[in-house]
Structure formats: C-alpha cells, structure tokens
Length: 505
Image (cartoon, rainbow, N blue to C red; front, top):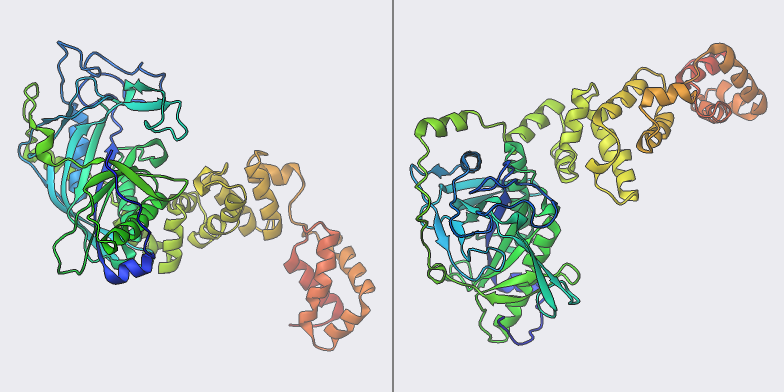
C-alpha cells in the first residue's frame, strides 16, 4: 500500500478557483445472462457461497472456456446505444496480476481489440445543461469472486485475521465502459460524474441487459480524478477510486479528491498514481495500491478462445431491435404529458418516470399521476425512509384511486385516507371505499339536514352571505364536512346552501 504525508484539505470552491479538474470514469456492468461469461455456471445473485461454479469458474486444470453468445449480443447492444463503432473482429486477452479471487490468477478480458470503441453519450444535468462524454472503448471481460475479510474493524484486509473467498461471482459477464478524459467540468465535476453514471444505468435498464442495481454491485464505477493548473496545461497525475456504487458516493469521491489533490499540490507534493478506496462513513478516500500501467499486466492473447467476429448483418439486426433509449423517451413523454422542464427533471430525479408512465397507461391523466407520485406518495416515502418505487402500491392502484376522485365517488381528502390504507395492505382503493363506507355523500336528503343545522348554528355567517359576501359559504361548508366525516359532496353542499339562502354567485 502506498503512503503519503497527511495533507490539509483545500476548500472545494477554492480548489476549483485555482485548479482545473479532469475526470475519467470506468463503469463496470454485470450482464444479466443466464450463465457466466465462459462457462455454464448459473449467473445468479445471493446463492450459497461457492455453489454457482464449475471447474472453469475455478480455473481447474483441463477446463476450457467457451464465449457466451448472449453476452456478446448484450455487449454489442451497449456499444450501439453509446454510439460506438463495433469491431469486425476482436479477441480476448489474459490480464495478469495477483488475483486472490480468481484461482487461475489472471482475468480474461479484452485489451487492444475491444468489441466497441469511439463512442459518445449526452448527459443531462439537473438544470438541463447537456454535457457530451466521449467513450474510449467498451470491452467484455469476466468478474472476479468476492473476498470477505474477517476480524478487522473496517471489513478491509488491513487488520483482518483471515479472509474468505466466494467464487460464485467469478466469471460473471461484465462490460467495462471507459471514457476519454472529461474536461471543462469546473465546479460541476461531481455532478457530471454522477449524472454520467446515472445515464449509463438508465441505458442498461432500457436495453434489458442488466438489472443495473447499484446496491447489489451490478453497476460499479471507478472514478479517476486529476488536477492541472489551467485548461491548457498538460493532464495531471490521476488517482482511481475503485468500485464506487452509489450516485451520492460518486459525487463525494470527486469532491474529496479535488480538495485532497489541491492540498497536496499546494504543499509541493506530487500526486501518486494509485488506486484508492472510498469510505462511506467519512466521505473520504484512502490509498490502495500503486496504479499499474497496461504493460504491468503482461497482456497476451487468450490462446483458448478464438476471435469474436460479429457479422455486419447481425450487428445491424441488433441495431434495428434497440428499444427507445432513455433520452429520446424522456423527450417524447415530456411532449405527450405537457410537463414543464422542471416537472420532468423532478420526476426523473425522484425515479418516478416509470411509475408515472405506468399510472397513465392504467387510465390516469399525466398531471394527476404526477400529482400523486410527486406529492403525497413522495411525502410518505420520505416519512417512511424508503424509495418511491419501493412503496407497496402499484400504478394501477393509483390510477384506480384517481378514477374514484374523477367519478366523484370520493374527494381528495378521503382519497388520501384511502391511499394510506392501500399502502398498509388493506386492498385496492374501490374495495376499501366500499368496505369502509367512505364514498362521498351526495344524497340531498342527508345533506339538507346537515345544511339546515349549519345555517341554524351560524346566523352571523348567514347574514354575511345574504349581504353579498358569497365567499363566506366556506364557513358553513366546514362544519357540514365535519358532521359527515369529510364525506359530503362539497359542490352539492354549496348549491344547497345557495338555494336555501336565495343567493347566486
């Protein structure tokens, strides 16, 4: 592990004023194939340790790899979605250094001949600004197993008494997407990094090549950060913070590294090219190992695998079958729904777009769907400390609830009560309204009695109304709603009051 003297962090804004940050991001996505990259072992999550394996997964003598055709197709789908060129022929290589979690002691990856290269993707920031990120390459490789370090306070190898290895993940298909240097981000570097990874995550899901669940490690980002004096200066020495797997952590990583590296440069220290680890508890990074260059891995062509040569016909067939990608879909939905840019960005940031779309498909208007998901349901999700999509309610139930409101079966106040009951597992909205007698009361014989009582109890209000202050009717509607447990049809109540008092308005 490399070391460096303790350095005072520079205030982030001060660091940005005096240095120009440059980013580079490597995103690994686990592909959702049925089997692993080079053997028939099942590609499953959370199996009992060391059960989803074959001799090839373990690199046992005599076992030979075979390329997973579906993984190749998924890699091409990703490359096309990122506007990459697809290689007419490419091959795998052995990437060699000490791998305690790959028993064959090398990783089967791609080096000088990736399957996809020279692409780009447009990234939209929260205020609508578009940043184009250029893609160097997207290549296929296999994942490593998982090490568990036991006996230490941090869960890392330093201080542990022993380590355990689960090889279930060894051989899981990966695509690694590597950007070219991302300049000109200035103070928005943390936001750009997180937005880029979010953009890729959304693309993976749209392509249906991965569940892309960051909390499971399906998508992991290695964040490279370097500083230079000006935008015209040569690139500085970079650090690579490994396996960052949440958008918030990506932002914190970039902010910390900019502040830390600025402190080192101010102190006259040299930045060390190294891998680093992000610490969720402190928001800082710590040194890992000196970063190897390509020649240190001693790449050479994998002798047990033939080159991959996707035909142009197959590539075009895959291109023709690509789904609508997230950016195009958002533009279409914004136009169809009539949302403002701010409304659309809020829905995207809340991870509510799919929920709103499904609610509209179930029969609700776009604005009413947005009202529920971005209003009451968002508030409940926050109160319950959960994500919006994790709430125990379906878009169809939300649309049904809105249908009851539109049909004047219930009012907004009752709808919110019904909503909570649905979330608590009481059933569908219509069934709850029926079982608990929550329907709006619009029967004149019932409402007239409540109106007569309110008029008798509030002569001063009645006088105001008769003198022309029709807005004072609200002071009578309140007691009537209370008397009917909020179930009175407020519109009909207003009509009855005006009829009885002989006023128009």
